[in-house]
Length: 168
Image 1 (cartoon, one colour):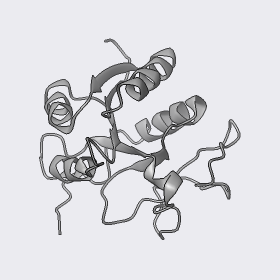
Image 2: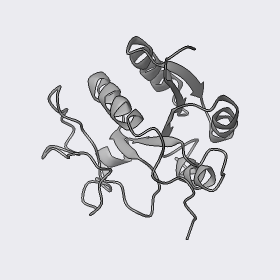
Image 3: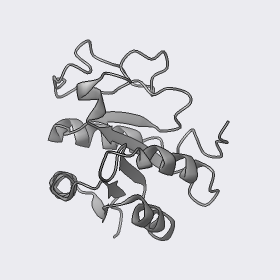
């Protein structure tokens, strides 16, 4: 793999994973796909990607298995420092994460959560609540430029600030 950074894409939408894979490979990343939380966790432990893009809801009925997996990752010392970018379409229907007080450290444009993309030099982000130990959120489907910018920005951190987090 050389100097390429590796991204684990975990989403039950096969077409979305393939689309994100094409975009991120074109930007120079190696991609590991996973279509359920069980294989995502196994691949996380064996492949040790630099970043994980994880869907909030998996399976029929939209169970929130992604949120459960985040908790499991943060409590496993072997992978707790993994950077996690949550991807969700929940925010398009109900802007849950736009009005929370804590952010993931990047500027939020006024159009955040309104289905608009930022200019090419802006980073689009959603607020990350302190009780949810992820490094960022992005709306699904993400615009290609927005996805690449967010991934590159998060990878500058090297490791998650949530490493060693304990569930309360």
